[in-house]
Length: 292
Length: 190
Image 1 (cartoon, rainbow over the protein chains, first blue to last red):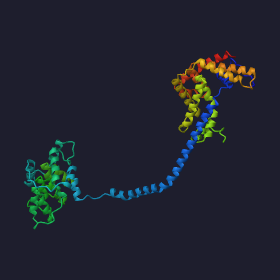
Image 2 (image 1 turned 30 degrees about the vertical axis):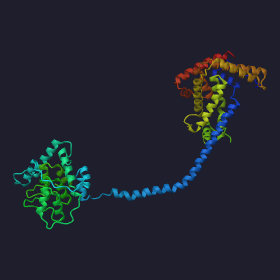
Image 3 (image 1 turned 60 degrees about the vertical axis):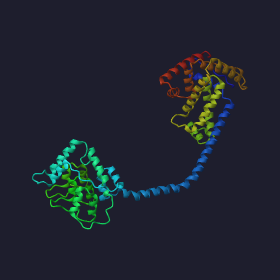
Image 4 (image 1 turned 135 degrees about the vertical axis):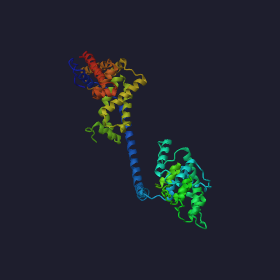
């Protein structure tokens, strides 16, 4: 340092004085500190270079080997999607047994696959059923029309459960009845007896339907007779099963293709009779099959 | 490789990719500024040596995490200040006038040992160096810290405020008081 540093001038600002004084301050970090810092940095740099080289070697090994496998897997997945997806997307018409199952609540459907063949049960008389029977058989001029009966039943259902849809089985009694009927009605899924009866009797078909005798009903259906054969008052087996409150027999008949809208001689339909009797499970099934 | 024309941000990015030469260039570019900031704040050469290593070790270790959203010098001086604050808290290293006075004598010894310096020039330089150190030592720590960050780090008031965690107005006030006080103290050596 051979030049003479200028003295501080009172008029300079502090920054300038600081800089000028700093220029003449020889203080520096020691060479040992400098060496330690630079050596440490060099070691870290070498380590980073080694890590990068390892990553590059690993990628060079893995990528060519796995690329065909990755591409192949993706191609197979796309192909499978193209082949399988249309099967799920294409609309298919439900079979009769499917339609019968859809008409029942989920627990009942589950029971269909495992339940043993049901025992027949006697017809259960009730006031509502008696009213329906009267409506179906009495003189047409005295009886209520089907439309009026439906309106009355709908009004009753609305009073009982105003928030629920009429096709949904409502109330503990009706739900239990529908579930029990469905579980008893394993005849839907049960195989039809292999040997048909000796002779076909339309009266026997109607009687079995009215009584809810599913064994006899299945036997008659297996004989191949007319499922919609009528009695003297024009009532089909479906109508008699409805009037008798035999929900399981109704389900079997509908599943075997019975006409859901076959009216009797007075014009009363099964749906009208079911509404008059407040048989909600039967109403739901009939509507499911498009009954009018 | 000539790194002189490369920006700090380019150099730290190249070092993060494994180029040790870029770090050497960065270190040489900022060594003196960091050293003065640390030594003039803590007033102890030994503590400043330790902090110098810690700061640059941290820069080398965290180079991969540096993102050029802020200037490299802002990042560097943030590391330096954080390390210094930690050291002061951990070691109870207070910024005592005694320590600074003692270090000033060491500087004087080195100056007089300079074979190229004339006796008069050496005496003047010694006076100015001692005056500067003593003036800095008389500043309140927060004023000294703000002043050294701005002068050595070449940082704006906003950057100093961000690093020190105080408001813009507070930093302006500290800088104003620091400059007034320094001018008065250094005028005594005119």
